Image 1 (cartoon, rainbow, N blue to C red):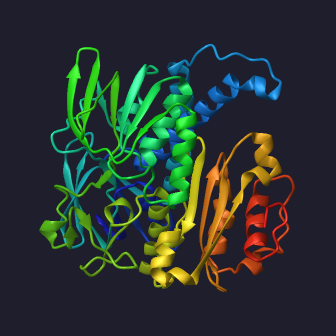
Image 2 (cartoon, one colour):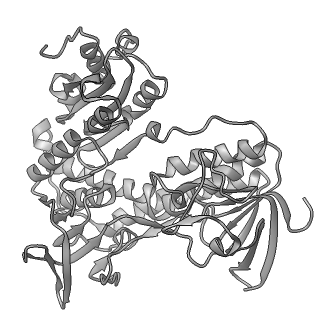
Image 3 (cartoon, one colour):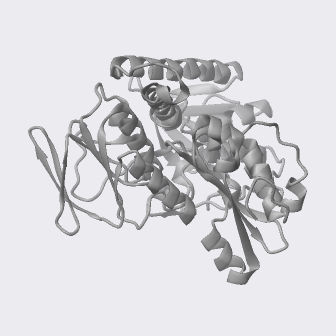
Length: 465
């Protein structure tokens, strides 16, 4: 590297950016990593990690409240949000320190400041402390600038009564009541947390069902579980208007109903952080704010790549992470295999959890033909560990008739931990007959995957045939 020039220059140090930096450095390339905030980006600081810490605290609250079911006498005296936030922040801080040490230890040059693309392979960085602007270049440039919380036209997020997910993570109290606008992953996870903490929660979703990207059976199961938890669910109900009052919010939905609550959480998705970063000005092909890239994350400009939430597709940290590795290996000439988007695991960490990989039933039938797809659903009522945990749900398999499994869909507490085996089954194009002989430890929830494949292979045991 010469002064200001790197083999790989990366704009953004979230999951995609730092993974690319670490792998590129591992491959012997000089790396510059531009970040205006903290290493780790949204996922580590205001996304995946802190929300899952809240969800774990919520699980403990539920277990304490329901401890008599297990013969344990305990009482939930309340939720100390200062203590919950301290626990959450400590988890984030430990991971942040570890990541910072790892990146520095690999010889990656961290360029702290606000970056903007000012040439085909150039980023100008305005230093956070001094305000001095310096131009850096890279033989390869990787765009990894992440995403932000969206809102709706005319709906202003004030951080007081109307919150984004970032505001919700810093809340210093358990709200009396909340309207959650959006029934996707973020909305369902926060709804689950607040319900466990004792809030009255109403989810408003314009589409016909919760977590609409999931299999319809999973959506219906989650909605039933939420209603049992006294979470009000209003699907097929578009937002119309909002009035902020002295002591709360009044949300008017289509049809004229008014929902009153202390807070409104706006969870209508995330948008790509690309405005004012110079991408379009430098000729990067864009669409609706997203950077267009091919299966190898290459943009239309030679030597310029894009990874993570700015690329159309699933906005998941592990997708960006794997794309970052792919790009580093592509730059190094290793010709890695492209990522199958359908093979990326998806998990909603609510109570109960929803996990999936591959195609849902409707997509599979549309792709292969209505008569060319088979499904089987194994109820967790037949799984010993699930009964010990007192969780309900299922494992649903979708396969091509006499062919491989093309989709795995699961609902139930802790089923997110099963997604590793599920993604191997999908990505290796396994047949039910291939998986059925696998020995699954007893008693585990992993057995449910084995039992489902036994049933799909035509030899159900702990299931009604």
